[in-house]
Image (cartoon, rainbow, N blue to C red):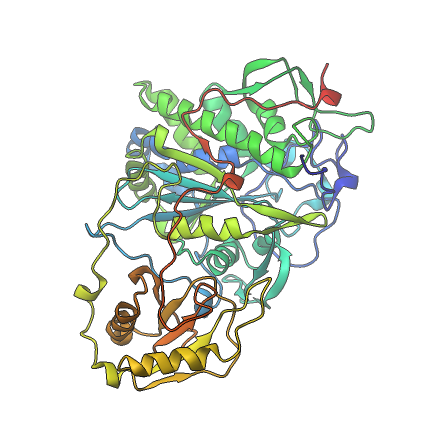
Length: 532
């Protein structure tokens, strides 16, 4: 049974007219501005992830980048991560062949700080206000460049936002708990959104791209439209005036310009009318745009390539690591290596908490798959595991390795096992780790048992401990939260003195609603109440 439509934070403003953020004339813009302070409730949040990812799949305009160096001047730049160093995710390790994956966070802001975006329509009173990151998508390109995984997070997901410092003003924003993820952008800029993702997922972000809304129009126009499908006639407007104003006939239509914006904003009329339904429509648009862009990339028409390149660079704010046309061109070369049929779009699994959502256990699994560079389409070939021990300092003798043992056996449903750290510390002593001691301080809940170490000189010791216990090398993690080699006994080891590694399930959760980019049959279901 589909969940009931959620009340958006600013649904009262979901009307036609100048103050509309989801109405027929209410196209919203974003130019990546940052700011602080309270945000008016009537500002309509938007999601247009389709065009956002299109910027990432920039293999389309590669030739244009070489020919038009002046495009450098279009790019806007901002800091990559402005959170605390302690909240940074560990650096991504190379695979057995020495290759590393690439993680790019794609952000869409709802700010309207340019004339172009204001001209598209919307609430003029919101000009200059703090932006919201209403589109957030992690693009993961595998280390061997054979596949790409995309994870989008609903804008109203409740997360912990770390302390962030605005690189421009120097203003520091304190950490927040269980706050809507889209508020991260207004706390110093896109670097705070990056910091929030790293803290939540444990995935190291290499780069970010932020797109403005006027770019959605120019990109769709530059490629001649994007094909989308509905299973019956749709008009996204009800008797109260709520809706985007989208009006399409049943079947496939090429949308561009403001009609493309309407598709990306439509919530009323798609499935249950929720923001999650809108995300499905955006994934369909995104996949179609990838196919269209790649098809256009094969053209020899320099004028069309120039328009694509102009539209893309004018729309982007990037981190310094992508702050030039040459760097974007190099990125495009990497992205073009991934076949369209190996691109998988997903939505972070979530559950309702009132009118908001929170990540589920399936979300944690999805993040693990990305961290471990496991393809979400299930078509990975078996990869040799990297030999970490070969590249680290030799381990000390077992009886010389100091080990702190923490009890992380608590779960949402079960209390921690009393005395568990003491029991395991004793078992370690029996195995020769005579300097193992129980840590009496409270440990955070941990689903799986981990070995953590604070610095490179202790990595060999941590790997030795894991090997003796039968803990997978991937469960050995560098962390600044510990002062020495630390064994965190997880919920998967609540009893006994011998650790048994759980069988891994590397399948993508059904709740992620995976959609392959080569799927041309996707068609949005229309609510009968919004047909004509």
